[in-house]
Image 1 (cartoon, rainbow, N blue to C red):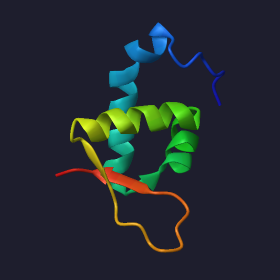
Image 2: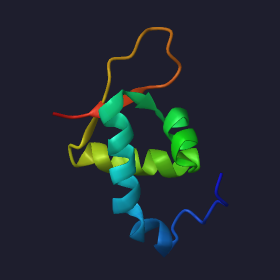
Image 3: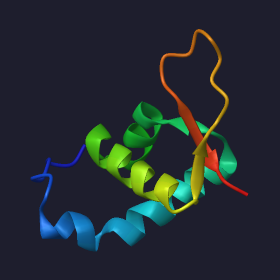
Length: 79
């Protein structure tokens, strides 16, 4: 896992398009939750969550239906 950066660092925002494309590539294959994406990308969970919130706001991803016993929401690409 990478070294954590400060949450408001300029590098974090410069790299957003790259990481959002990576997230979309994983979500095209199957719906995933934040811990799964964080592990696959090697990013801290708070960064993945930040990207997902932005992507959801702009209509790129949506929450997949959640089973009753699932602990985390899964995200999928929005058609």
